[in-house]
Length: 239
Image 1 (cartoon, rainbow, N blue to C red):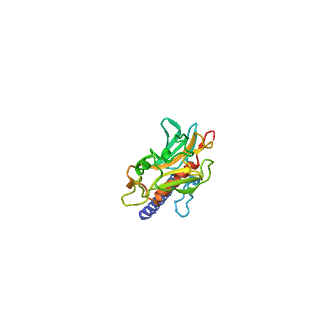
Image 2: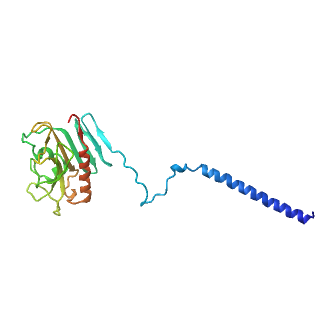
């Protein structure tokens, strides 16, 4: 074999060796990358708004003590009223849901008076110029089911009235709601006409009538529905 032939064979062997090493390196790294991937059963597909499986809704949080329990929707926070564990405030932003499972009235009037449930609520105090007083106008009621204590929700809106403050632009605004029955009582009695009773109200944290949610506002409607949903989950110990 001459020198030229020997050189050619050396080059061929060198090329073959390089190819063998390259193939081996590729296999080793391919296996290494495969081992770093999660098992196929846990690999998530690409998210597609049209075909992705919806995430199951989580179980709602709740406030529970020895007197009552209520489920909370996302974004809402519940706190016991200081000095009265039978009453709670549930809030989100400026919206306030008040539940008192041990309410008592002083008026002696069957069903109580509006001032007994409205006075002290920020938005009601903002609209009503002088207490005691009746609502600015007749409530707009929505029939509700699921409770033996009430059958409807009554929503109150501002109206031109000598004892009511309205927005400077004349817009109709929501300022208060309460749960009642067909007789429109403010107190929902456990035993007809007797204390204690159940009082459930909704109000808004503001002292500016121009900041009240206007009638028909989508956020207002959604907030009223969310508060109603939570009220329907209310359980009262011994009732």
